[in-house]
Image (cartoon, rainbow, N blue to C red; front, side):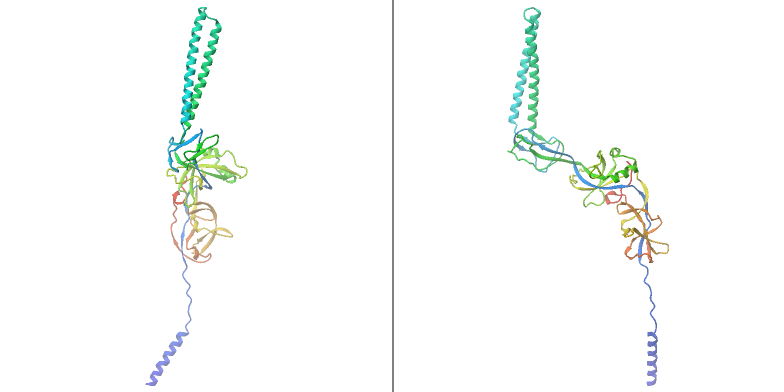
Length: 391
């Protein structure tokens, strides 16, 4: 019995020792999975990326044009006002009295003219009857002409008095939003000095002013054969974005170009106009403007901006070859199209570009590519490139 147990124990030890002598075999990990896409092939247009500021369509500073005490203010600070709406009333009694005085002078001169005309006709008839001298006729001709001139002067004084009286009521020259009042009722205004009362801005539509440097200007002229004067007549699309806005949600058009380049800065002033019915765009805001370059439509290859890498050698993309090995591909970048980027050189339309999993993609290593179609939008408000259309 003891011998049988000893033999069993010995056999178990031999199995254990033989198991320990087996060698471990290394199993390499599977290739990392990445997402690849073919470049998007679509029509794009060239755009200029410019910066500037917004400015009101119309701006006026209301001033007192006659002297007097400010009697009434007909608005609240910051109100929206309509064209012709009364805003200020300056003391009127003085100018009403001056108007009555001027009207009385007109009546007086009319009476003098009528009297002179009557006497001239009477003495003309007496001269025919040889009952008066010719000098009497000449004298009344002078009196008539003098009364006629005095009447014209009196009528002019009456018109000026009416004009001064109308200046006592200050009205809105256009519809817009009025700033705070600068003078309160009871103050003397227009007393031989420039007296601002308030400022009105019309911001629907609204302007955006921006500049283009002479290098881009000459390049665009050479490419399109269109000068600045012709460009402003074409209503070229200009898309605008304010600080913090994604894409270019505001659509307008170019409506003005300056007549000369500023020598000190080497830039040309441009202006675009935008609808602003809700008054959300205020004057003076920083603005980014994307201006379409006409006749620049072309077919191009686009890839996601996130797929583009940069190093000391320049811009590059990571692609996957037929053996599923990662390759570094140097490329020449074109214009941005929202979340996409145009690739000018270095890429074919059948190349597989890594668009996701870039951290696991090392040039020279094998990967497990998963094909995914690449799509691109045309919605300007969402940040992608607006659909090209020559104006």
